[in-house]
Structure formats: structure tokens, C-alpha cells
Amino acid sequence: QAEVKESGGGSVQAGGSLTLSCVASRFPLDDADMAWYRRAQGSECELVSSTNRDGSTFYSDPVKGRFTISRDNAKNTVYLQMNSLKPEDMAIYYCAVRGTPMPCRGQGTQVIVSS
Image (cartoon, rainbow, N blue to C red; front, side, top):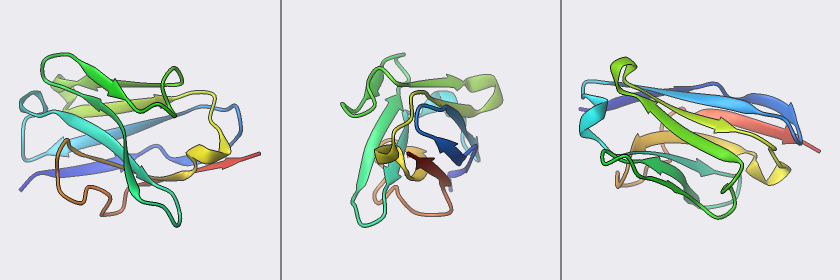
């Protein structure tokens, strides 16, 4: 069973930056399309960004131009560099294989952005 462990969340002021990490275990990262999702309080789980095996990436409109996703297959790790953070980015962020049903589950990593 695939497992991931997210880290790197924290509390920042608007305009600040954070880098999230996702370490995958029990499966080789280079066999998977990986994604970051988030769920803000009272909101649905939403896809934020993905990095795919073919090298392509996807960004949702709210984060395009501010967030950068990357992967290090040798370290089995996916990163999400988040710049120019806004209060509306505040959420719990989750990492999962893209297409996983109900990806916003588990511990995730919390991002708090104060204005």
C-alpha cells in the first residue's frame, strides 16, 4: 500500500514562502503521477498541482505563477515551493498519487497565512 508523509507546513505572513515536502514509501516515485491537494476549513478538497511521469506539470488557476512543483525521484520526494502566499492559501495540504480517491485524508501539513 502506497504511503506518503507530508511536511514543511507552518505559519507565515501574507507574501511569505514555504516549501512543502512529500516523501513516498512502498512505491517508486518515478512510476507515479503525483499531486498536491488542499482543503481549507469548510471547503472541498481541491487539486493544487501535479507532476507527472512524462515531465508535465499542472497548476490550478489560484496558484499559477506562485507555486512550483518538483520531484526528486532519487529521494522519492515531491516538493511544492509556495511563494507570495495569500490568506486564501491557508489550508491543510496533502500529497497523493494523482487520481487517488479522497486524497485529502491523513495528517497532511497545515499552512497558516496571516494577513
